[in-house]
Image (cartoon, rainbow over all chains, first blue to last red; front, top):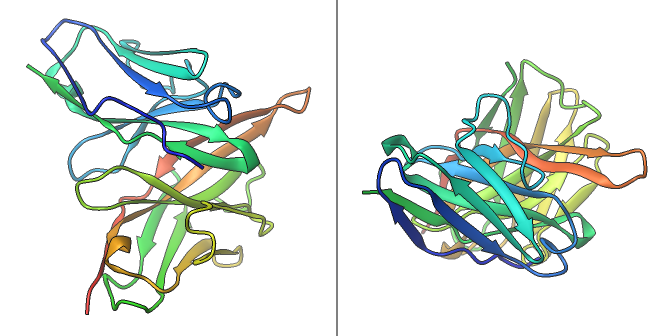
Length: 110
Length: 128
């Protein structure tokens, strides 16, 4: 089980789009379409935003989208809003029914 | 709506065993499509998957913690529990319990495998 690699921070102005990358290996992201993304505000529990690479749970804004290419998954947030400022984590199923989780990316809305 | 609630001591001494329980309310822990998981987060740091359990008792553990972790389930109480032995200051963290959705398609390929519901978390500090 290995950690996935995310940028430590990203930023954008209201209304702009940003993309957060999540790089794994052929043992996790590269082999399974089982990548999920979580949003965490300070002092709160994480919230599921994307599952199975690109699917949105009911109630999550369509400004959030996900994709994958090879060993790298991405989360894109369009039309940035102040409320999007949070930490974001990617997570992938890995061999032997384990999980890899990224180190987290702090999103700042300027 | 199903809810998860962590409980247990907030302070544990070094070398002792950390014990936490997660109570599942307004729903059954024996649902066929779900595993149950523990995930932790050291102060100011990222998330780390600790392990998962099915209501049958089948478990999966993070290899880096496997030698010290035991996760168990009590279906009669609708609870699952975490024990982490020989703790050190590095085990100080907010511990979350979560529901893990797991499914398989008609070809037998895994689908889901995401944490769709989380408890509020409980801070456990390891200190003498």
